[in-house]
Structure formats: structure tokens, C-alpha cells
Image (cartoon, rainbow, N blue to C red; front, side):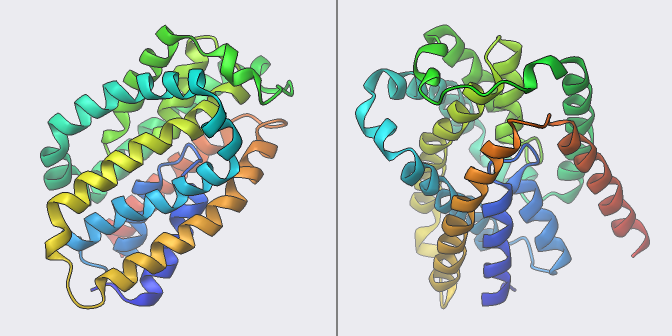
Length: 263
């Protein structure tokens, strides 16, 4: 059963990992397992809803761009559509069989880590240049936006990582690292708004006792931690590749598999 401290810890985990290519949902599932929090209906809803707290940090950081650039947000909406259709169709299956499944997370982290590491080793040349933030508006085409949305839909599987899927997909389409990272940030807004709205609609009447308080703690914590994480991540990608995240995912998967079997 979740406690207030558990909610705080999960909020911190979510805020740190939401924008990294390591899967925030996967990390929350693994941490919940370590904290011995049962993967009941509320915990699964908690793991979805507090992600919106981290996403609101994007709204705050990019508020001028979001509310003044219709063309950019139109492309973000187009990229959201494939995920919306696929996610809505598979929502019940994902929540019942995949969300909360530690073994699915471990497998996704491991194989996703290998893909990221191999991709980054092959594409080291694209990692360096400082790209002006305004470039994201003109760099992403309508066709690329739709393809990015298809890549993102892979992340309905816990552990895949929404940001990893969109960033790698965007780079495969020829977008620069900085441009696709910022586009991925913005794309998270409609995705998590829709996911949260759907989950609240379906399960709001099942929240009891102090569960709303725990949701508030996780939500607010994720927001403030994510504010720091966004700026740190943007600074990091100017000088480093994502290969380290691939290695991290592989090691984490192996460690957790060992914990499950031997501890």
C-alpha cells in the first residue's frame, strides 16, 4: 500500500526520468516494486497521472512558443494523432497486462538500451552542434510529424520510453538532436493530457481515503523536479551522446532481473 513518502519518491523519480530516454513509467514500476507497493488499480493510475505534473513543466518552460506558434503546435497535434488512435485502441490491454509488469519493463529496458547504444555509436557525428531553439518550428515537416507520432506509439509498452522512441525516430528522419528533443518535449503535452484525462474519466470514482492527497504530492513533486531536469537535459545533449543512457538501461535491466531472482 502506498504511503506519502512513497508518493514523494515516485514523484522525484518521474520528474527526473520523464524526459530522459530511459522510460519514466518503467522506472516507477521498478521503484514501486522495490518499495513493495502493490500494483493495484490506484498505483497504475498514479503512475499515469503524475506524469502530467512533469509535462506541465514543459508548458511552463516553453509557454511563449506554445501559445504564440500555431504552425508548430499544429505539427505537434498531428504527431499526437497516431499515438492517440493506437493508445485508445489498446488502452485496456496495456493497463491490464503490461502496466505494472516488471518483466515487460526489464525486457523493454534491456533491448531498448541495446538499440540506443548501437544507434548512437553509428551516429556520433550528429551530437555536437548547438542548434537555435527557434529552428524546431521550421525543421519538422508535416510528414515527419506523423512519422514521429508512429514512433512514439511504440512507447505504449512500459519500459520502451516515449522520449527514446521519438528522439531516435526523429534522428532517423534526419532531424538534428536538439530539434527532435524539443519537439519530443512538446509532443508529451497532448499525449499525457489525453492519457490522464482518459484514466481519470474511467477511474475517478475509485479513488478513496487519502489517495487524492498522494496524487497531489506525486504530481507537484514531479512538476518541480522536471523543471530542473529539462534544463539539465538540454545542456547535456549539447556535449554528449545518448550512448550512456543505452548502457544505463542495459545495466539496470540486468540488476533488477538479478534482484527478482536472487533477492
